Amino acid sequence: MLCEPNLSITERLARGKSLRAGLPRAKQGDWQPSSDRADPIDTLQAADRGRVAELLPIKYGRMVVSPFGFFRGAAPVMARDFAVLPRTGLLVQLCGDAHIRNLGAFASAEGNIVFDINDFDETIRGPWEWDMKRLATSFVLAGRESGTTDRGCRDAVVVLVEAYRSALARFARTPFLELARHRVGRELEARPIDALLKKAERSTPRRNLQKLTTRESGVIHFASRPPLLQRLPSSEAESVLASLPAYREMLAPERRLIFDAYRAADVAMKLAGTGSVGTRDYVVLMFGIGEDDPLFLQVKQEMPSCWAPFLDEPPAAHDGQRVADGQLRTQMTSDPLLGWTTIDGNHYLVRQLADHKSSIEPQELSGSAIVEYARVCGEVFATAHARTGDAAALAGYCGKLDTLDQALARFALAYADTTTVDHAALQAAIRSGRIVAAKTVA
Image (cartoon, rainbow, N blue to C red):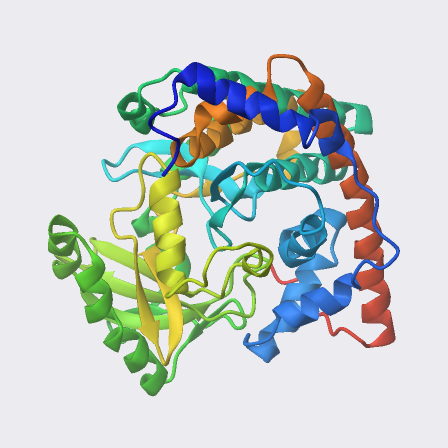
């Protein structure tokens, strides 16, 4: 239940405000690594269990490029750090891997290009502040990478949290049906968002066909570009295709009509992301009425959320379903072909591959762009948290003053410094041979 139905808005606002007694907003800014903090390299290696060992050097090659690159692959480290911090007790559906590149533009079920959170591998029900602290830290790390000063990064985080608070204050009094339909529209003409929307418009299935496939003897199939893209042996490809009927049954009847109009032509393994490298990530090429009607499905292995060991939530029965359900709860509109399946006992999410999808790069956040982007991201996360939590209690805790804004800015700068130290530890582990890292693979 999102809120207590017998409590008025005023009572729920007061309940949220009362939680400041247990965890003052200013204390949200406290961060100092403890003397017995777990070795971040040990934490990362523990999270690698069950992954494809040959791919892990690529993961670490991407992580070692910069502190922000490290951060993208180090959600398990942050989860362990956050486990010892005090919590407000207000729960929402977490993105779980909140950072600047996990928001972006993509196509809605109606074909419109929208901007929202777009990565849910780590999603789980948990404390709202975990998402916001991770997101705020990413602004500092990405900002530093783009050449923004720490003062500029701090300003961006203050704007991020102020936008989050302001939106929650509105949502606290918004009828839930109206909130469920809410789409972030203000500020979408801001420079970084406008660029993302235009980039997403160009990312179509036909463009993927040009980028990912080749034609031999009149037959179109995936190109072979190891390790980024590799066609599968027939037995492994057959296992992937054999999982699709079960996935089809997860779809709503009107979505099955879409799926049934296409036939599979080829299967490959595709490398993408940073934190997810090492999981099995398949892509299926399908055709509808002809070669000009391609559809790409991504069949992506999902591991348990890195936050799960530190929460009271029961283990997910199916981690592909956990991710799909978290996405559906959080987004206003989601991929119409979103679903899940099982292959050889492992859990998989199924979705369209990069259907009009684009995300921001740190270098695009120079100058005023970082503040413009922060403002939109604050409202996006407020929308997600209000839909899946008690908006009035959240608003009551966050308050009207900038106390929380300043606290999370202080936290973000401090945790970014810790991440920079952890990044140096990874560099040392690679030099010593403890970790094997491949040269950067795009």
